[in-house]
Length: 440
Ligand SMILES: Cc1ncc(COP(=O)(O)O)c(C=O)c1O
Image (cartoon, rainbow, N blue to C red; front, side, top):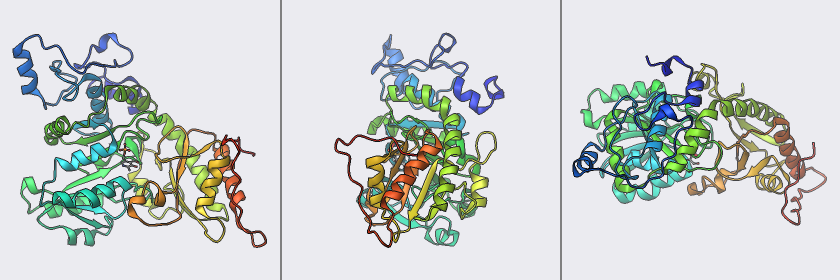
């Protein structure tokens, strides 16, 4: 066990590697931001060696690798990847320019024409679009199944199936997929399959972050993240990551080199220096607030249903308590809330417009895992690729005071609530579009 490994994850996220072959760590306090597109090679031999060794896993213990060109590998990004692999308890990590770049690369270097993927029925809108718009053109089959219906998953698997793909918690419904149960099924199904045809479990764990869930320990093979969300945390960088077995590492690097979707070193640096060290702090605060907001929403007469893993009413409460666990072993229900308004009492679009016009602490914007509380309507925004209308609302809790968020939500609901005497009235936009502080 190294000295670093004797410390809690929260501390390790603040301090990062004790020593790294990727950079002179003994003389830096903050990880360095490298900004070279290309690297001096000294000799033809060194240049050849760099290309020859490309794809090898760089550890903190070994010799400094020969860096050649930013699109192949570079130090800041590589240090971030080491940290992400470690907190996910994985063997290796490859980062990408965005969450979608990570998802398409992990699937792209696993699947070929003729293969099939089985994906959960509800997914983030762009992942849905990837499967529906692009995979048919590439001759890759996609079956959509409820991943908690194990009999249906078993029935959907055939000799062409390679990947079971899902998010947990699911965006936007917050439903959980039972990872251990799927592992059991996949082990059974893999018993008769050749090594290179084994079924693999891919999970997009963006909603939980490694703070709230470590899927590899529960039985997943590959973990995907959008670093744009809570891992970055401040809404300033796009990024994505694949945490995978060593056996997949070189292929993913090759894919990234040839398709070109690299994470910029500047984005990697911000995630490494600001995002990771503050992850537990932000998540703990956001969860504290999310519990209060969810409980308040559940009692409101305009709200028909609230989905939040931290509520006693959450339908998969027991699974949530087993699967969503933080670095210290505490329940980690996360910062995302999904709720439906009672359409007889309030229209979701009017409610969202009222917030957009009047709220200060709640911002109408897509994305999630931000310092600011963000609200959106998935059916017409992030999940519009499904082409379905529906009134549920997705709320990503930020770092504001819980009472301010509740007061802004309360004021917006009051502004649009339908009464029997008075028909619903749309809020009047402020003349200059300026935001107003909420009235308590
Ligand atoms: C669950 C999930 N996965 C992946 C993505 C894609 O991430 P990015 O926007 O970084 O490409 C998102 C984006 O919202 C998401 O919510």
